[in-house]
Amino acid sequence: MVKQIVQRMIINLFKADQSQQQLLRLALPLHLKEYSLVRFVSQNKLLYKDVDVLDHTCEVSNYDAYLTNYKPIVRIMVQTLKEILDTTSSETNKILADNPQLKKRTRANVLHNYYNLIDAGVQKNTIMKNAWLLAHENSRLKDKLNCIKILNMNNDQLIPWLRLTQEELTTFVFHTQNDMGSYTYNKIEHLAHRLEV
Image (cartoon, rainbow, N blue to C red; front, side):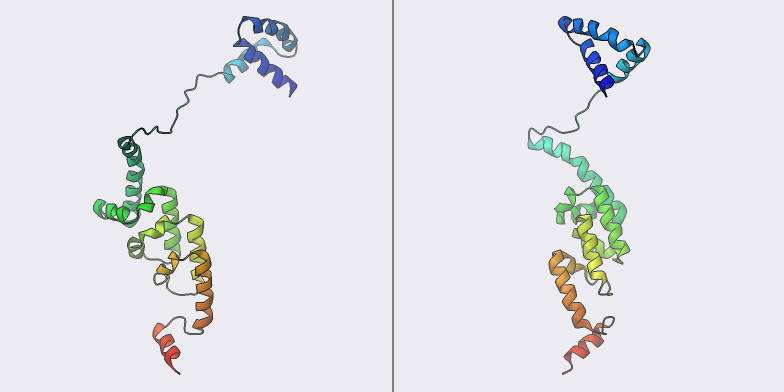
């Protein structure tokens, strides 16, 4: 630990002005007793490489600059939606216009949501009609899909329920599950049983 601190101090002193280099002349012989000059010089070269640091943030001075910097993100989202939903550019632009929250999501987030919906049994055309599903946060959508999975119903029919909050959905699923009884799979039979008095 002490050796590393001494090495760093000596390297910093190499860059210092003349008055601090006198300290270097005093410290260098003490340090070089344990280390060869070759090792010391090689470490000096390794620590001070010429590396350009690029700033990836965008300075936005006006609205036109904002649009210029924002377009690549929208372009990536358009490409992603075209790939997963098999839509044309005009259909994809309409989906983005109807669901502007999709523009704020990453490609990975949208793909993760899409595959979660497909795994839950939601059809691709249902996802196209309800593109707002792709704008959910990954964990929230997964929790909601797990919640409605308990009902053993067709998830395509339960898509509107996913607009509810997690607490509302849990309560609704609980009451529906208690109310359904043995008529889970046939709606007509269930309604006939319910209307029988």
